[in-house]
Image (cartoon, rainbow, N blue to C red; front, side, top):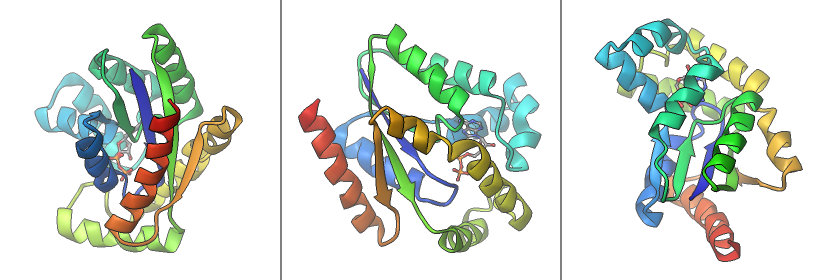
Amino acid sequence: MRAFLLIGPPGAGKGTQARRLVEKYNWGYLATGDLLREEIRKGTPLGTSIQALVENGKLVPDELIIQLVESHLKNGRDYLLDGFPRTVAQAEALDTLLQQKNAYLGGALFLQVPEDVLLQRLSTRAQIEGRADDTAETIQTRLREYHQKTAPLLSYYKAKNKLYEIAGLGSIEEVGERIEKVVETLLRDA
Ligand code: ADP
């Protein structure tokens, strides 16, 4: 089992690109944001306990996320992880988890998008999808959380020689092709 990570600020286009990749490479797909929204929708104890955090754009505690990921990862296939890890503690937990499963990290794909474009995309999405965490105030919180807690992952994966930065500006197709180029080299070298 190999894990490929798709990391980037809110609005970078992770979900859109993830769907393309998973289909093309037949990977398992695990998006922590989707899993959390599902728990909230179903009103499970986990969902109820994290609803306010998610809707206010704050990160959910590491322990809860790590448990959630552990319970969903099945052995024996490659995975694309979308929106996880989002903190250095989560990245360390993932390293341990992969080791336990005799699996390894294929690469951390970082989607880079300038802040003004992110803001524009998120406010458009707010109008279309009506996600509870796409309000102007919450968007600011999510970006702040990203810069404080998730951006340090860049140096974490760079130090491990696992960092692949991809420019996220352009059409869905253009960005998709850039990502696929990187993935192809990773698969070839594996
Ligand atoms: P986006 O990247 O567009 O902000 P996601 O769907 O990935 O959206 O995440 C939505 C929310 O779910 C986050 O703002 C956060 O509250 C919570 N969340 C998702 N993944 C994690 C994670 N790995 N650690 C902590 N919180 C998370």
